[in-house]
Image (cartoon, rainbow, N blue to C red):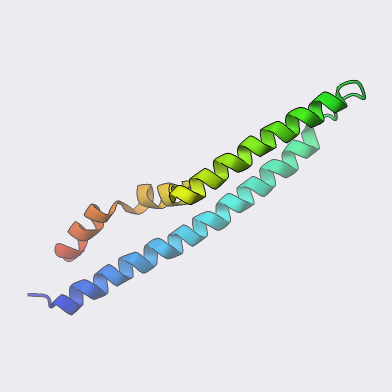
Length: 103
């Protein structure tokens, strides 16, 4: 019968793997965002002189809404990276079951 320390060690390994996976996903998402922005700038034509003022106002409004959304997500802890990590590895119940059953 495995010892309690064995279960704790397995749980620690799973938690560390989850954190490492979360960090890697965060870096991958940053790279994807940077690539998307670079491609968007490369392929989106600039607004004409007549449209620039309206485009600037709309851009400021949309960017403000984007920042508000990101702030809400970060404040709630309900981030895309956390969601991806949980989808990839499993929720806490699945992880607990895994450690109880010895992997």
